[in-house]
Amino acid sequence: MKDQPVAEELIAFSNGIRLSIRQWIGLAVFGVVFVVAAPSVWERIETFSVEPDYRIPHDLSNDYWLYARYARVAGEQGDAVVIGDSVVWGEYVTPEATLSHYLNQHLAGKRFANLGLGGAHQLALTGLVTHYASAVKDTTVVLQCNPLWMSSARRDLRDDSAEEFNHPRLIPRFSPRVPRYREEISGRLSVLVEQRFPFNQWTNHLQQVYYDRSPIPAWTIAHPYDNPVQPLTRGLPALDRQRRTEELPWYKTGNAKVDFAWFEQRDQSLQLQAFKEVAEVLKRRGNRVFVLVGPLNEHMLADESLKRYQKVKTWIKDWLEEQQIAYVIPPPLASEQYGDMSHPLAAGYEALARQLAREPFLQKAP
Image (tube, rainbow, N blue to C red):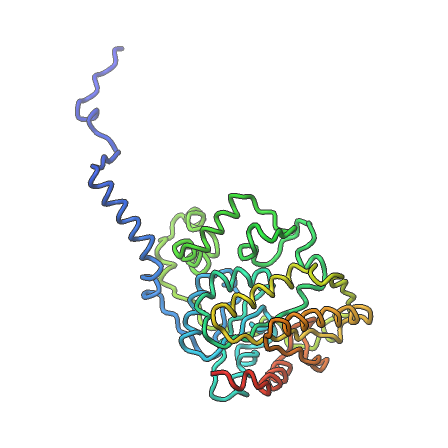
């Protein structure tokens, strides 16, 4: 059988769309405008209510765009900020029992915002403060230095194991070299782009808040019958007022004394060097920096480890005095006021805030 002739109208039909030069230019202009304007437009659409004692939701600890937005609001509404890891955030307590809450209570007339972030070790704080807390300037900053991150080569990220660690997208990409960080060059470069372009930070925000912390294309594949716009109508989660961990003293939860190796040379710790960089960045921005060292649970340290820790505290103290940075290294809280190696319970936060409130530096905070 001979092939049937194909109808002329079928030959002329195509699914492709041909754009003129003018249309291509218009499309390019639209793309540029969208990339530049979308993050700021979204801020007007997405309601962000900062209540008293607000803290970044724990499930959104990797949403650095939201952190940057909160840092701007905190700088506009408050007199001071407290920056640090989950000790500042309040791992064992509700928002109404955090360090910032009790500082506000004991330093009447001043407002301290909680800019703590779970898992934010000192190396992570370098990226967080440098790229996402640029709005924190010309204000009073209580900067927490948690020596726990320096207590071993593993926590210090000096070991070369393949073990995962917190906030790898915040640590320095190339220098100083972090042995634990093994990202390929392409991955490192993509993070550099994200840190410098609000659009990339914004799309990560959408993934973290609305699309189950997964890339949007992957979400659409996992939800083929769902409207991909529908999740955007949920809005930001309300302030979580629940404790993440039961509030019990460390010795009632199976914890025992530990023997940390710490580090043997003054400049050996990557985390300590990172802390110094964070303090210097904050000072260059015109901030009045006050450093809180600890409060580490020394009751949990074995005798030899405690002796080594005293040397670490001396090294930190010496550097702060060399730089003329105000600081406090508080004595250990009562044993029953710790939930673990570094996190106070509510009574511990109140006792610590009461001590900080007596510091002339913070009393004179504008």
